[in-house]
Image 1 (cartoon, chains in turn cyan, blue):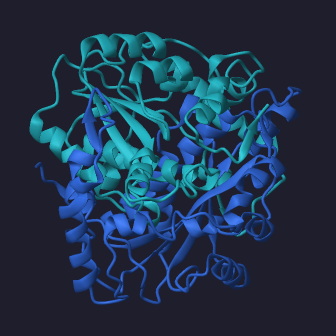
Image 2 (spheres, each protein chain N blue to C red):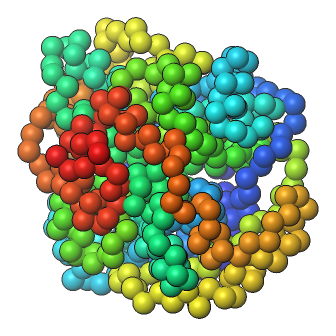
Length: 254
Length: 254
């Protein structure tokens, strides 16, 4: 195992859900924006936009939709947006049609740009001694969130991030051993759930020992449980949201 | 602007397309895998898998489909795969149905996991003094690529990466100024293409000065040109590929 400042921080990553009541400085913000800006981008299209939400009313509404008390509370709230609107404007104002902007292909390239920029910013955050938590919950109620963010067509809020000065020190969460997630040349189809027995035990022990939020669930128990069981939730508005935004129009809605 | 080893490397990122004829060491590989493993994951579902392609026949076939001579040539080739197959196996072998695995929602969460892991690995690569180039071209011919990779249902090869010891020193590519990509609270709809005049000049000068591959294209000229113009290409097989993989089944094909 190789060690340096970047890698040591990456392999010790843990999400922070409790922050000190302190905002990022202008210098910290500019640094994060510059890292965002320099992320690799598909076909040099630069399809990502970063929203910094500082307005208290807006933060409260987003927090309510996300259903997590730390969203838009202490620290700084960011929304990473797939943005094909800017390039549409360039094309239209220069007399061109929208071309391929409404295809799944170009949307996925925008999603690449946006999510790579997300992780790049995340690593910069931790390198400054700050912490973050990913906010997938910004898509718990996609249509309602779009109203709050008031985004134009051809944009899609992909993932949020709450950033701040950590006010907790969570334990490192045990991940699937590499033998289950990294393969050479061939994807093995002979996965046997029995092989997860040891890992299940490690995860159970982790929950047993951690200070807060006692829940004793093995990995396989979580995967066979509520989070993947069939249910009717607003997250299934995603295709409708994308079509409302005129994205992925080479697909039909059910 | 804040400086540290991680950030200085991020804001100086450039893609490397020429590598020395040298493979990664076992220690470098293990380190990259460990970074991959510790990336944030949505709902702790761990929906990402990393394929390392070392087989020469397979590398040649992938190179041909990608149409870029550096793919699978010098250095190491990785394919980052959205993987819901593993969790399907866990559920089925423990007597459960597939639940929400075929929804767009869960697929997008898998895409989050996979693309965040991609950028995390990318940052680790550069921290070791190595370089990389993103391979979006693995989706230039989606159905043919699926045949070569021979992946099970409920998986999707999202993005590739060629990694190695740099054998070139490209110039830093000028990005859109922050005023166009980072906003506070409101997304401004009043974008005017004229405001890109200075940036267009910077991009033109960059192409004019760079050593290789002389092409003098402003940013707006690129966006109004071939890369976004309407055309019939295999990349539009993406919806068909996803359905073949039983992903996003809450959408219909056109």
